[in-house]
Length: 367
Image 1: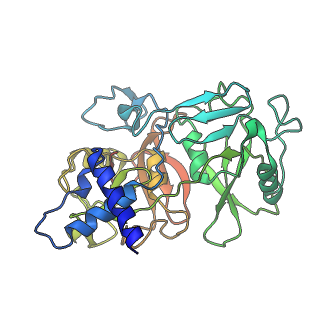
Image 2: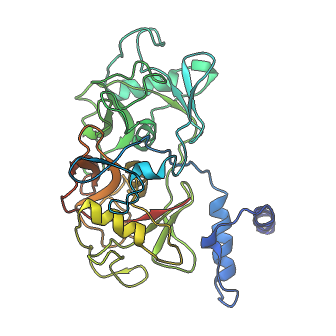
């Protein structure tokens, strides 16, 4: 016990002394729980992190499908306005030409989906989920250990400025339109189906792992799951030390603020609003001592939701009283700019829909 205490003390001192500090760790010294919360915060900061890559989106538009300046105050805070936020896309082909390093997440990707030659010379091999999982485990490209990617990891390498395919073919030349890529993520509703992402438009859906044959693009590196928690002096904000994002715990109401009796004590599932109102509400939100909130991109929204839950797909202890419905993202559909991306948290699927539709809203900030 003494050795553990000493380790914790050294860790805290090193982190504190290095200037590694975030505002959510601040608390009043007169609060008896201050030191314990700070200690927990520093320990969480020491856990593995992975930044959420930008979606790649470059164009802003209104709800009628007209391109507009991203500095617009009428439709503020769109995905393309926050270019390279939270972190830039950073994909680079490695010297072998067979793998790709992601400087944002720290992962290394098989450059082309599995094929007969394990290179980029032929069509992708489709197979059942279990066979693709075995293939990844036995892969030895660049002397690395490989595995099936999670659904969130696949979402992170999609480019939502592109379509047909929604993957950069300069980086992934055989990740072409019409492929479905298996993930390791289990569909929560039945505990047996697995999630797959389609390369055509980066939508994803569940499939029977012994009834469907899909392609696979293996990944190397540690899986870094999200760890959403309530931390610090303000109970209305959730924090994820993996992505270093914060999110409002309660869904916004018709006044554009979290619908709560007190911070984190939600009054209802919130109010459905259109995309323009969702953008404006998050941009104008001054909450918990922060005024730099934004509507999450589709990748950030996929980071807030939890694939181990359904109806709704948010951790109920962290995000209470979430609506069993669709939640807006700030990301426009690049093939129909009068529509935007949303996630249906009843089953975790993603959709694009007209921007005048009424959906629910949760804001994010950071890192």
